[in-house]
Every structure is written in C-alpha cells, then in structure tokens.
Length: 275
Image 1 (cartoon, one colour):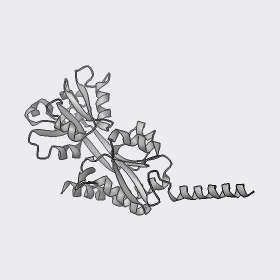
Image 2 (tube, one colour):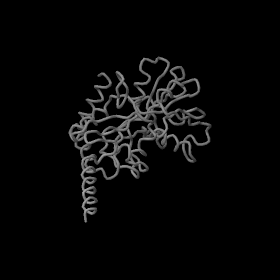
Image 3 (cartoon, helix red, strand yellow):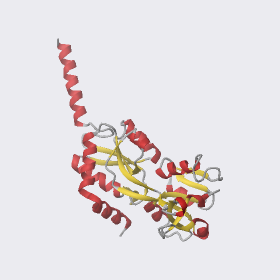
Image 4 (cartoon, helix red, strand yellow):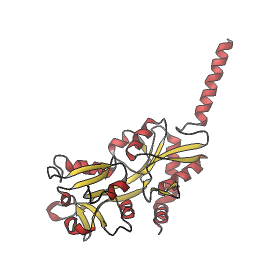
C-alpha cells in the first residue's frame, strides 16, 4: 500500500511538472524559438543579438504567455523538422512560407506577410536578365536564367520553386541551368559572379543584401503569361511554425498577429528597414 502511494505521488508530481512546462525547450518561464538570423528585416544580427520583425512578434507572444523568449540561430532547413519533433523547440519563426509538405509536419499561424521572390544578378549583366513585364515593371523571367548557375538557400520556398522549374515540364528543364545550394544567404550573394551567376531569395532580404553593393542589382521574378499576357510574379506568404497539438502557443501567436494587423506588421518591417 505504501509503495502504491509513493508511485501515485510521483505520477501527480510528473503531471504537475508537465502542466507547468508544456512547451519543449523551456523551463517554467522560458520559450525557445528556432530561427535563422540571416534574413533581414525579419531576423538578423545587430549588436551581437538576434533582432527583427519575427523577434518582435515572438517577444510579444512571450509576454502574453508570461515566458522569456530565447532565440536559437540554426540552419533554415532544419527548423521545420525540429519543430515537428517538438523536443528542443515548439516554434520556428524565420520568414517561413506555408506549403503542403510543411503543413503535414507542423501547424502554422495565420499568414502575416506576403513577399515576391527576387533575383539578384550582376549589374554589369542587367540586359541579360531584365525584361519589361506585362504590368510595365522591370522583372526577370525564369527563362533568362537558362544555362546559369542559380544560387539558393537550402529548404526555402525559393528552393522549391527552382526545383519545380528544373524538373521535367519546368521552364528551365534541359536548359543547362544548375541549382547551387547554400546554407547562408550572405555567402550565396558573395559568390556572385565568381561561381554563381544569380541568387533567388525574397524581396526584402534581397534588397538588404545588395544595399551599398553597386556591382549587384535585383528585380522581381516572373512567370510569363499565356500568349504574352498576364505575367505572374512568383511570391510566397510567411507564417510561424508550431508543433502540432500546441494549441495554447498557437492561439497566443495568432492573437498577437491579429492585434498587430497588417499595419502593425508593416510598421515593424519599416522599423527594421530604418524607414
């Protein structure tokens, strides 16, 4: 009888501990967030600290949950799997776009920002890549990258777009275009034009990465419309990844995003762009 009481007491204590800290990678007052701090203005290093739009959002979530938020800088292509596993972290905030493969692994917050994909290329070769689109803008069509070495950050939506275009039936299939992968956007861009002809990444990071680099330019990536009409910009939308079943955490994130709204998110973007 005494042994049964001890076991019962231990079970109660374990349940209480689980309730006190239901998030992975946390103590009773800590929430660990995985990010990749090379994606300004959403996450980047300043003064030795990880800062950015996603950092501001998650700090507000921490306040709502009564937890200190700790950010871990990891390779982007490991984030979704780590969140899905749920042992070291329950949340990934890194300008992560939503697709079906990722939705099968994790839950996503509401989408809070939509970005066009951009191509970074040598300014001296602008005429090779730039075209006037049907909406009167300067853009880069996929076909302009025929035979080129195309730099990409592994696991990003840009990477998935590129792999589709290189596959059978894609606009770059059989054209000699080559996918070159990097874990860091900074390294990818610094490789232009030495070993890489162009890099495809999202709009704001592209603009930030070529800032003060007169030898590089960037422009939005486009698909050609049928019969030369209605060209379509390549784009994706960001959301925050959460371990499946972490309802309290997901609800807190959505509450913060709802409270910020489109204007609040844009204000954070402007702040980190220095506007």
